[in-house]
Length: 114
Length: 115
Image 1: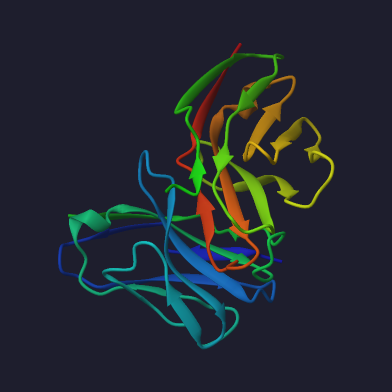
Image 2: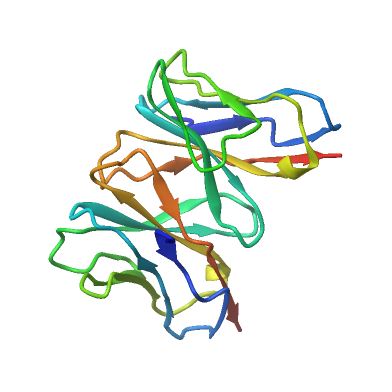
């Protein structure tokens, strides 16, 4: 099992560019999510999905799109990058949404927007 | 209101001593889970320990234990016999039973173990 994988590990964008952060899991998890981590703010939920074809917004969804066409993949799209989106992005997954379902995290993507 | 509050931005502990990292939570859902994650300087998020709201006993995993005080809504992490490798950020998190779609994180505590 590779667990949760994310690509790329590092990315530098110019303001206005778009890109997609990839996330995949091989554990057959129904729930997947994207977070951003900024200094002093913990992890903030961007979008999540409870299954293929179902997505919803988290705490900070503006400027990001997601889709979930398969159970395995949950890409995060930045439509028009802004310096405020400079952050570390984590993808995570869990078997379900029960209180005891821990989340497994990918290694993160460090994004810099100039 | 914050769902998870960690009031200690930074903590120091002597090697081989025990340390307690504080976490309080806010929920009206009777069913919830509490989690602690460790984030070393390399950046990955490592799951440490879980406590369910209906669990009668405090959770333990090796040198980690969770001091669960339900009436006070606190879920403090206790690390015994600290090691240099315990230096990291520690995050408390909660998942509610009614709306398990969201996993709430605190802002974290930076722990430094001093030799």
